[in-house]
Image (cartoon, one colour):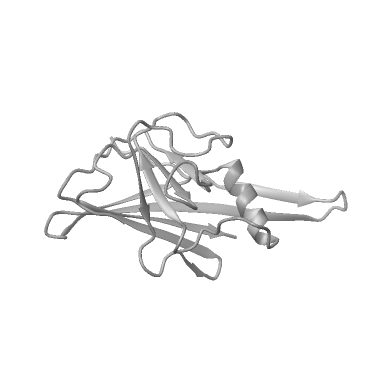
Length: 173
């Protein structure tokens, strides 16, 4: 069964002056699935995720030039796991028993206008378990700061010799 959803987070800031600023956070996950011959056999798109409090704090700290590990090519990872617990802002990582983290592909993350794109590749020997939860972290484990968490009810299982490329594209408008 294919389930799809779409969500938009809206942020409003005002100082009681009748002026408000709004921003829309629009995340889209894409999973490209390749067989052992690197032939693309499926592309899956998943919309939405929940910003985690620790990720928001990290972004704001980086925004003001504070001391925080950046979500750059050297530090950012995409994590996948088999957890099914609903996402909550207070969580600090993946919750499943099986989880894997992959570093950013060369030249990622990328920023173009108001879009940031994170992309990681899980080769034949990596991430071979159910993929039901996703995150972007500034390190290779749950002890790093996790920007977000997405939980899906749809069952997808990666197995050797497949290679899966997962990408998160976030549009802020």
